Amino acid sequence: MILCDIGNTFLHFYYRGRIWKEEKTKLTPKDSKELIMYISVNEDSTNTLLYAHPRCFDLTPYLNIDTNYKGLGIDRIAACKAISDGVIVDAGSAITVDIMQQGIHLGGFIMPGIAKYRKMFSSISVLDCEMNLGVDLDTFPQNTRDAVSYGMLNSILLMLKNTSKNKKIHFTGGDGKFLSRFFKDCFYDDLLVFKGMQKAINENFTSQGIYV
Image (tube, rainbow, N blue to C red):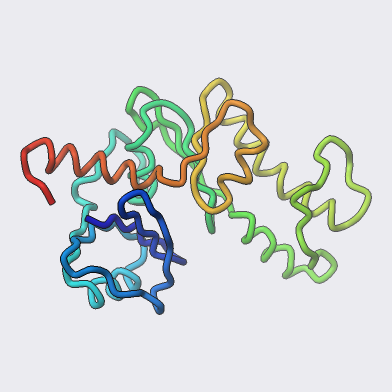
């Protein structure tokens, strides 16, 4: 069985301890004997997967958490399902932040991802410069490149610090490992969404003696 998390940019796959990502226009053939269990936030990429691999199963109806949040993305639900207590930060094209407490989703928010900050600044000619991700955050910047980088990084880090307080932070996503360096009591897990998917499979299928 292959797990697939279909995002807006890439399709992320997990199979027997290995993870990889593919663009929808460059999908490689999978073993037709393997069922692909997927979740998706992008309809076009989903259709591409279904066309290329007919043995697919949408896990979305089986992924549920206790929340009052309206319109919570299925990828966020999967990540939250993997964590009972803590703050979940998925740092990709956007940075999503969700708070879990005793298995209940208290809410969350969304910020631009690091690459999106870069794109926003590039639209202002005098601020169109490469980010310095190693900028010193303990001193005030003395040039435009560092000033832009300082503002971008601190806007993200201070929001996360204010939100997490005494809760542990669980990072995932492409920029999750980088952001985790700024926090002592945290975890980085690139399998977080897949762990939530696997938990849903165990609850709805395996525990009932049904194997997929």
